Length: 240
Image (tube, rainbow, N blue to C red; front, side, top):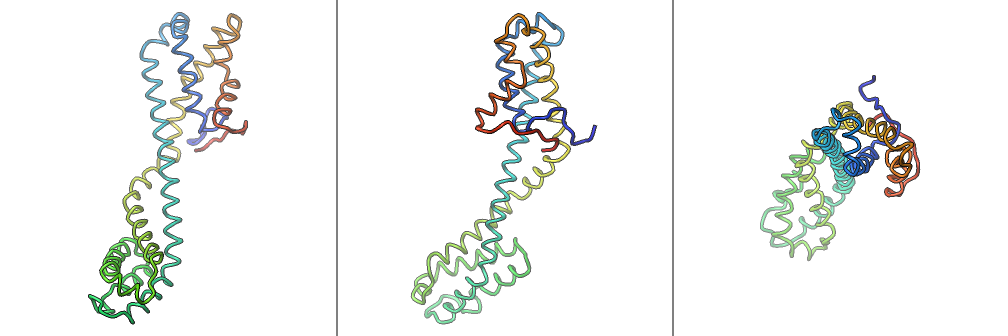
């Protein structure tokens, strides 16, 4: 089997909801399963099932973290594009402002411009911090020359984004590695007991209890999951 190939044809995002519905049915019918296959449905079965479910849930949370980090990165890129014009306008006002606490050449604009052009994000965060401190200290003098609050806010947003990106980068890269072939093993580990529950539930209830049999019919379970998620039938995928 390919390292990324999965033994089920529905969406990976549906695996955990399917597992939760099956778990609830199994807990209700546990005595029947233990009577059918006492060696396979010992108390450890539920413990192992929950452990496998928790592992898949952690993978899904990791994917959310990556998506959030991508949004941060996109926001940073947009602010970086706007930064040169912001610096040019600020530089003109610093040059004409009166009573500044630091000389214009020491205000920090050139350091920010250099770090931005060198694509040095860590250094840019440091130089932006200095620039923002000088802007705050000389806020009145700059406003008198036309500096706008929204321009300062854009510079502040870029600094905040760079700090956030730096803080989450390590976990984001680690999460990215999780969202490759490695987590296929976690999906398979959860689907294995799901497959048994579906088959054994069918053996128990297909002829004796049509209502309960639906709770162990994958097509019916997926219909319920998709109704609750507000999606259509869709097709499965073989990779996360």
